[in-house]
Image (cartoon, rainbow, N blue to C red):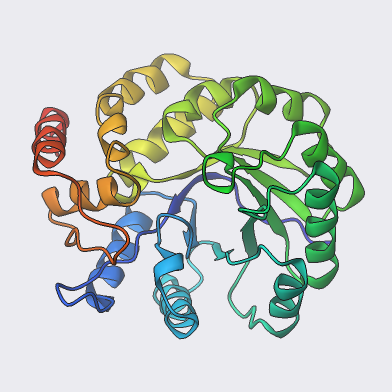
Length: 296
């Protein structure tokens, strides 16, 4: 199968809202242009940071189509597919999905049911059989309560070249290194945690799907490029500039933190849909202080 022509710094694009909680398409267009001009390598639409779980099916499709239209082929587009706790439902969705303009899909392992590793394997293999485009495995046990073990990721990658990357958001560097050690050539390993991107690339990872790149696309993509080029001195120097911002993006949850940062930077409002709520005033002020240290 055709290998995807992308790696490097991806951004999990936020979905801006107006004060009345309607999707703010002018702000979304501004953001898409901002990250593209900032040197981002690919866009992930409808990910965790994009608040796909608070959007209707119709809104998800509209946001994705709008993103594809604005990007206009300038960089690859990955579509997040969530609500996949029931394998048959995911398979049926894939069979009827409009894949025009989509270079790959990203799907997290089933949540809540806490399946066995065999169940996770069978779930993804069913998705691979149904999907006409490459699949990015999204391992985020902090949200699913079920870790995709390194052995399972490797088993999937060796069973099908439909799996072209894993977004490792387990926070476990040893697990990432095990995948990197034994993976087939076609499988890429991407960081799912911004603060761990630099050490993961030093171990052989080829990219990241980033939250903070919504606010700092140029700086964060420069970190990734420097690290991938082996210039770890430059990468560390750039990485240090963002190090004190990262924790404050998550203390009140994601995407609450990144939206607050983007409001501070004048990129979009920090509005969210319940059950997500804005960061506390204390967090907002601390974020503002750390952002001011970095400057423009």
